[in-house]
Image 1 (cartoon, rainbow, N blue to C red):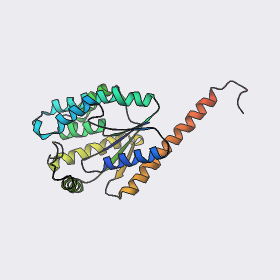
Image 2: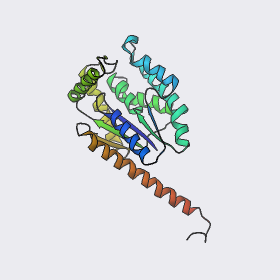
Image 3: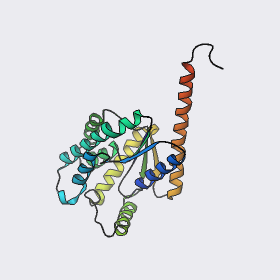
Image 4: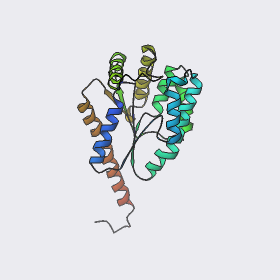
Length: 229
């Protein structure tokens, strides 16, 4: 199973991704946690280049291509092999982030960026995308608090964009979810962290149970006639 966590900076998606990984592992599942951009050696290098303010300015098209390149390596070198081995993959960001940040935030067009990433990933879509939705004011306050707790580390290139940029991103995320509601779990990120974690775990557990039943039925259906109990 492939699970992606999405949301604006300060939405709490990284916290929820970590909590899900911990609880799935505690239940005995083989889980691979990862993130974007990153996950591979080349992906982590591209992450540094595209997010570090020292490398600014980066034009919007180059930025989109760098994210897509990192994602291509991520899928082919890490995510797809793990899924083929039967592991659960939990990623902090995936294609929706590029559609929101570069497609809407940078005005490249959501469809253009979505098509670029469809090619980059070979059409690999998450089984479930958890969207942590939060208003821009709350997200900004959380980012400021996080920077203080990190010893005064400054914001990255995306976090330092104006509120109008983050508002466009939020709208793009929710538009994507509205267009494919069966694949998304949209949560109000202002709710308490434990409540959100319970809802995420419940949805994932339900999907795993459903897959387990489907697999059992498929196996039963392949048994020779007369061999079933």
